[in-house]
Length: 281
Image (cartoon, rainbow, N blue to C red; front, side, top):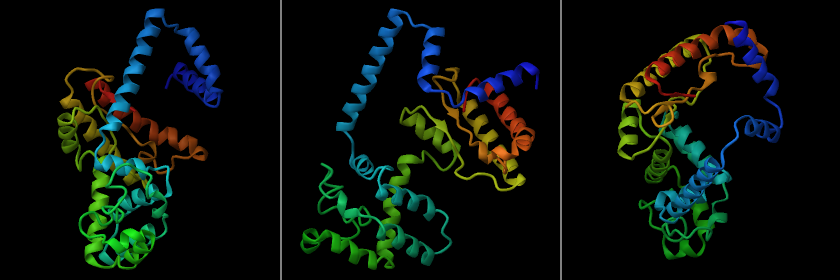
């Protein structure tokens, strides 16, 4: 690494806690927009907002559910934790206990009447847990909180477990584009999505983990790069790298080790992305 490179890193390090307003003001002064440029930015922003509002009105069943049970709610977090944790459970008994804990600890009744979607609200509710697999009768509709408590008590039944698994799968498909990078690329192209793909949810715990994850990222960058059509990094797919997946000791107190182990891996991956001129974050 050259002294110039080090100066750039030092400058970034010095400025990382600066007031955002000061930084924005400096950037605007350094790269002033012309009146036409500002007008173009404003028009683009208005178009994006209006398009988002229109699509919100046309949202489907799953989108309504996800909006009500967002990650900003305890219940939304419980479902997403469940979605990820169920992938790692070794047996049915562990799954049953996990489902009972996550579903039983949340205040589902507080969400009643908060959405216009029948799927989120009335008789179809049964949490999404039940989907179409468990019928919610008139008595249950009249006293849904107690019904849900009784339902939680029956979570060991295979049909309830399957209902939860189905609900979690539906939710997961909203956030996971594909099981492999090849499948994700096909789906994103079919849906006309522009993606920055991330394959890993865990950080590395050992040096072997970091080496394995680097290869996974390298293969993904190669796959994305080979499908690139020369749009460049702004208009084509990219790959998002989790830094803690590339170093088992990605910690401030291990700065020397991070520079020694992490930087070369990041550089190797960056060079692959640069070869294909794709986005790498």
